[in-house]
Figure 1 (cartoon, rainbow, N blue to C red):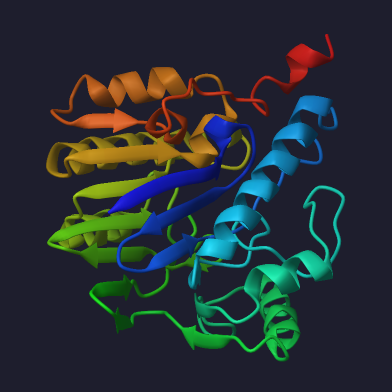
Figure 2: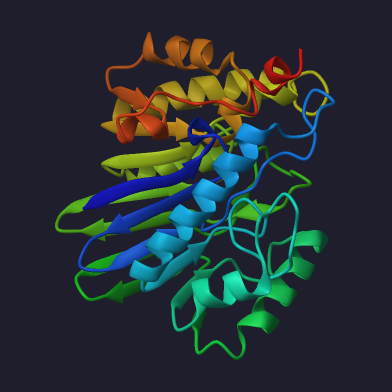
Length: 291
């Protein structure tokens, strides 16, 4: 099983886009974006460069992939058809990306908040003439060639009852090995998400860490501590954990990871390290470019 991180916070953008190759070629969460404002500042040039580079990577691997999965409808997890300054997308780019592909996507009307429901409806409408094979993935299992795709039932986007809605995880099983991509479970904070991950027991877990940059005004300290405890338990039972995304929007992320590693027996890395690259946390460092 070949795993290629395409776009993550450790690579300078908001994303968890990942390419996985078995006997199938699979692109998970093909989206990328940057924060319109952080520390009161708009993106610096290097963030736009990273955005364009990550978009090119997604397009490159999108041409190879026959299968796409979409965990939910935030713009850093799928490529929308509408043009957006901080999305670097256009109708033609999206048409080329999705045309003729098999898509396994989060349900558009069940366990979904209002904003994502609207985005999902627009997305499905735009797919109609692209000769796509679209399946709702929530809680389902699909066998394609020698590869099994297994999707969770909807889990909270972070803590239980989150206003940000729900996400689905993707587990890929091939040749006796499994990889789970747990998008936006944020730690996981929610005990049910932790238990689901442990029950699946993948060989490799790609996980969004908790949004420590929001602590004190959008998330409670207790939620961050719950995420830390849950990640310790997970990392002691799963051989390889790749933690990235929300966690890496704050330079304190490395202290958080070290605090987990001290109580873990297994390897914990960020996505860039899978590629042999040092983490490049552009959003977390945005203020440095202005002062």
